[in-house]
Length: 55
Image (cartoon, rainbow, N blue to C red; front, side, top):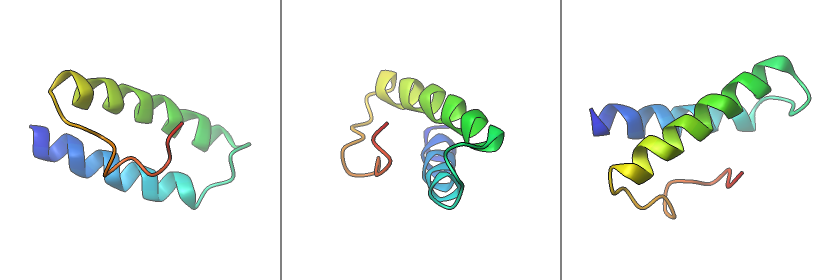
């Protein structure tokens, strides 16, 4: 489960970087980004190495 969430977090950041921040898609991705950040942090994962969006 943790591996899947880490992979999704990484993939989502790739999508976010290739998308204009003013789009509806980016807004939806940012919501999921925040959810995954909470899940991973609560699971004890240190995000400093894998969080390159930092929003």
